[in-house]
Structure formats: structure tokens, C-alpha cells
Image (cartoon, rainbow, N blue to C red; front, side, top):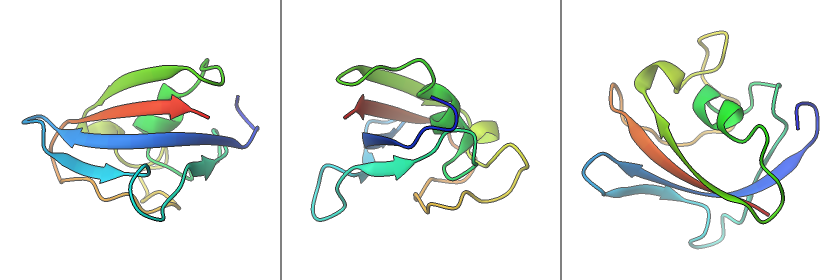
Length: 93
């Protein structure tokens, strides 16, 4: 997947189960990015590696994996709470 543009549906939850973000609601549509280009936070970028179309995966993302590899903000803005672990449900579409 590195270097290939992919589309995923994403739902992000905090540890208490409160939904923080979803591409499935409203007009957002799937999230489109290329793993390896630091367009999304590291936990999501690394978490999709090895996925196949139609596959679902749940990723636990600690705060240390919520920036890019270079410790910068990701290119695509996804609201994440500071210093909290989040749960990310991903569907490769």
C-alpha cells in the first residue's frame, strides 16, 4: 500500500466510547490518502498497511502516534483530543 492512493471510511472514538469523527456521516465521504506521505496521523497511516479492499480493522492509537513520523501535524485535518488514546474503526473501500 505504501505509495498507492487508498480510500477508507473512518470512525474515531475516545476511550469512553464517544464518537469524535466519522467519514460515514454527512458530506465527508471516504478519506483519500497515500500511505508513506504523512497526509494523515501516523497511527492511521501505519494501521492500514496490509489491508485489502472490503476489510475492516480497529486500531488503538496512543497520543504518540497522532502526528506524522516527523512529529508534524498531518496534511489532512482530523480532530483528535490532545493526550488521549483513540480507537479508530477503518473500512478499506
